Length: 320
Image (tube, rainbow, N blue to C red; front, side, top):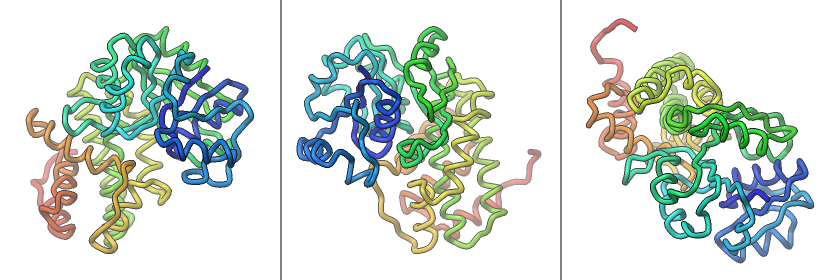
């Protein structure tokens, strides 16, 4: 059995894809009423309305029902991951725990796999990331992601267990690179949304994506990652999708901010906390990350969008 901890849109989409492929899957929701509603309706009306659950998909709010799962996907927001792992450390001990979230913990500065290793040391950490929308995965549309684990053997085993007819997984041993790509592309997506909302144009968006990608690589390498990982699905691929589509919560948030000067946040607008966390880490390590630092200032309300653009354009001229 495979467990999916977190019944948001992405967790539900992954659970549907796995169960549709014939695997026994149990989807855990924290709220018992939400779990009851999903069992009654045969779908997650709150997050993925209109997508029926396969026969092999079970739903529960009792963490004990994941005891038989050897693999558990952790589809909870990064900023709540530590709390969830602390709460359920005993139940998750010894399992393969695959982070299906993107970001950097604002308090600790750790990525999801390091958080898993710290709080559930007997577990085997892994991460699943790449260009994907929950609605596409749930609808059975072809999607490709990167699955990273510390050892090639673990990555291969998880790749085999979690690939489905519409979900093609590529394996990697560069967990740090996969984490950074998934985290920082959300920051750049907010910046691109702001640019488009403020009427700065497609050329400005292309520049932000390109220079933002350079920051992603710089930060990843500083954390021990391989630069080439960022050229893959979990880096460039996810950046391209997230910075160009309004189905991205981070891009849509930035777009609203650029249009109206304010926007509604949700727990899955991961780029907000990530901008703050990465800007702080980069400052301590003396890494030059002007877009990330400027976005952190904008999102903290320290500078206006117009001033941010002026500051970036006025930076010293330099070779690329």
